Amino acid sequence: MKQIHLGYALYNYGTHPAGWTPHSRDIATKIEHFQHYAKIAEASKFDMVFRADALFAHTDHLEAWSRNPYHMNSIEPLTLFSALSQVTSKIGLAGTISTSYSEPYNVARQLASLDHLSHGRAAWNVVTSASSDAAKNFGQSKIPSHEARYGRAREYIEAIHALWDTYEEDAFVLDPSSGYYFDPQKFHPVSYAGKYVSVDGALNIARPPQGYPVLIQAGSSGPGKQFAAEFAEVIFSLNRDKHTAQAFYKDMRDRVSAAGRDPAGLKILPSLTVVVGETKAEAESYYASLEARVPNIVKLEQLTQDLGVDVTRLPLDRPVPLELLPRNTEYIQSVFQTATELVRTGKPLREILQFYRLSGWGTPLCGSAIEISDWIEEWVADEACDGFMIIGPSEPHGLETFSASVIPELQRRGSFRREYEGNTLRDHLRLPRPKSRHSRNV
Image (cartoon, rainbow, N blue to C red; front, side, top):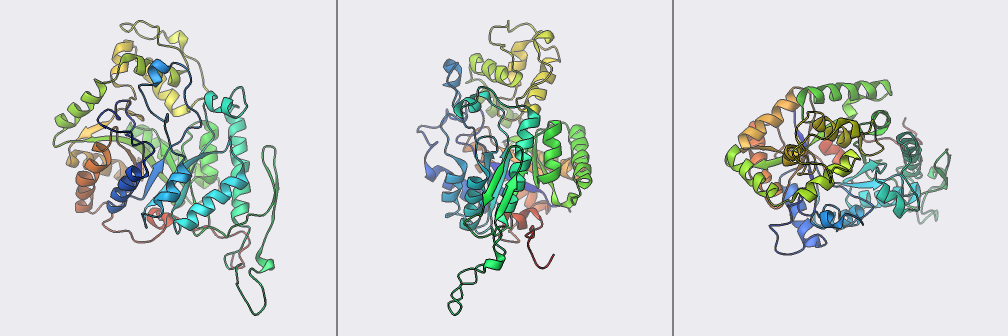
């Protein structure tokens, strides 16, 4: 039976705007909170925990955003995972870093450090950042085009790979008799000059335990798919229709082959927002209770962001006029497509707001542990994906409930591990370890 890969998205309170409301205290910056959930995820044998990030806080429309804490009080991912690496020993640690607002040398060093601290469990969710709010924080008036962002990202990865190969595997000889700490013949400075990125120097830390930390990507635009085909080892996608997911799965594997890579070195994990109950009705009731706590102003602001069109003043009992929709966007393509497809159904705005994306990444899958396990297994068996990035709309209901009910059911069926078979994230995902470009054994 094909084994399922599972990650868990580690948010402050879950991704629903009302996810924070059951909590009596602010836990967003409390390391004990994240340690608790990382330990649960590891005990449940998840491949990884994942941390999204944003390089901005909303400064306008605060009547809406002050009610929705998504990314408004958020610990930086690598700092968080450096701490979590010391209270876990197996689970992968996947953090988001933007190629648009950082430099390759610093990121190469930070990720190599995390990989060493965690003994080979680091992963990098490579993003190009699609928010004009982030651009303004870094002295830019607007975000660059998709082509420019992915052009920079491509050069960025090439430079970082070269930096990670600065030292060969056995460069550090520590030989008192010769006086050499490292072998200078196994040290390879980097000279990389591209249109967007340049590096002339050498990394000051040994090659990461995994060779390279695992690279994750989530772009769904044309440039994003091509970038993923060349570099990604894990792809996060936003596909809730199985036929669409199957087409995406085949397309990306074909693109990887065309790029000269082995498709076996790619895992596709769609995001899956899950609400588990004793019955489907119970799960739906819980989710409805979250929805009921969210005023329309929050929902309208979220849809406005995703569409790129101000819908806050439109009548709720009429459809959104199609002529208002932009033809394209520099924002996240998959999110924009989901929003526009929903608007094009012609449903009244009020009806759209009842179920649009308030859980963070799509209408949730509600059901019992058996129903959700059936659904997950069917998608993997039918080559729609290799597993899922599980998202909880609210904690502790999300991870704790999923770990206590769905994980044991999948383990009982033999489709999910009972124990880790290796120590690194590459081991868990069954991904090859990249050889150094300077290896004598190539």
